[in-house]
Length: 319
Image 1 (cartoon, rainbow, N blue to C red):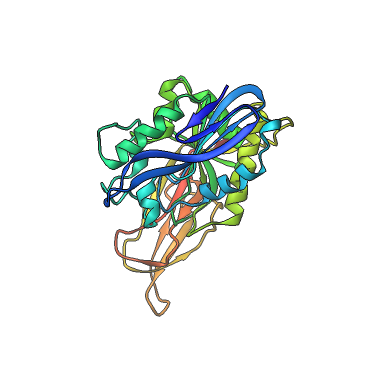
Image 2: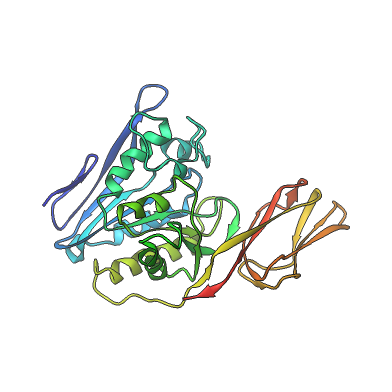
């Protein structure tokens, strides 16, 4: 059977790329998202894959541009539906939010066909996503420094929690954040439709980070093998899971000097960072409230009073 996504159409054993119309730009020209469909030669599940719902998060797009040319539909069982760039307007200007309506697009699902620019895009892509058996929504920690991890956002009491947790393990980044997400996230909304959905968060960088992109490529292939889109056994290890975040800001202005490395385990009372003046004099130090893992940290050293510095993943276990 032929499968379609926007202008892309593929018969069994074929791949095609095209565009999905989501409205018009300010000059009246069409706003169309780049899409791809991969229709396996054999029957199987359907995977929906998207990236760049935050306009400056490019590692997920890096994953897609590596994975798609490598896949041979003749060797695939099932279907893969891909939206390569979701936040069309934010991507054009390399901004996190959609500049047309100043919305964070991944807070607008399931969308609204007659809503704001972001809501219209969310509505169009969710119509595709909700036809899938599995969803991967590729992200990164914006331009901050962050470990490679996968987020389960449905909440631990959700009926799909175990399936989402399994999908996160299969992606095999090594770290999982198992914390209910904000309203409007795709990974929170899609499980309500009975679809296992996760947010792989592939590090944090300006532009592409090759190591994080490769982690995402490996994760996608692991999913394809585990769920029998492709032959071969997946590589799976125990995942370190955090169930909440402690966030830390600067109490004074100055320059941040970290005392713990990204991914390092810390104990309550350990020094996370110091803030110095321009001449290296320490003005203050910040210590961990709870034991955990240094999960994320700001990239630039300069901070003002009250500005975000880092996050520690807490309530840590493994599975």
